[in-house]
Length: 173
Image (cartoon, rainbow, N blue to C red; front, side, top):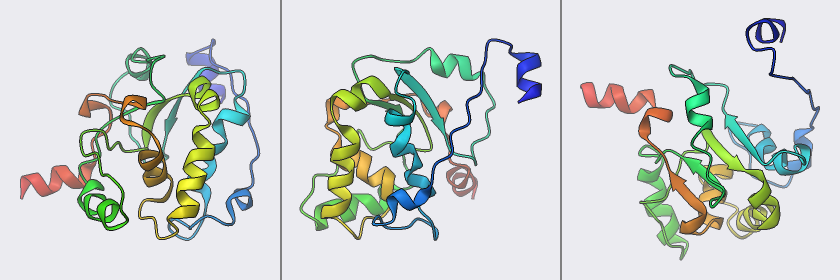
C-alpha cells in the first residue's frame, strides 16, 4: 500500500472484509468459495461505475491504464476469449440444454466489470439463479457469468490482456 502511494498518489486503498460463507450454497472451486467474492463487487463498490477485476495469478506485462481505457458503458463485462476453458464448456452447455456462444465466452480472471450495468440489469441475481439451476457447473462463477449474460452484454478484448500460459506451452510443443 505504501509503495503504491509513493508511485501513484492518486490511487487509494479501501479494505473490505468479506466472508466467503455468504456463498456457502454454491459449488466450491478448488475447495473454497472465494472465487465468488467478485459477485459482491456491485454491492461493496456501490459508488463505482467500473472496476478491473484481476485474479491473484495474473502477471501484468503492460500498463493497466491502457486496459482501463477500454471501458465501454454499453456492456456488462469486457474480457478475453477463454480458449482453454471453452474446450470443456462447449460440451457442457449443450448437454444441459444451453446455448454455448464460443464467440462470446470470456475468461473471468482479468475483466472490466461495468458495475452500474451489473446493478441495473441484476446480473449477480441472474448468475446466482444460473448456479442454482446448474449445480454441476464446471468453471463456477465464470460459467455462471457466461451462461447468464446475453451476447450483447459481453465484449471481447484483445488476447494481449489475458494470455493463459498453459496454451502458450501447448503451442510450442
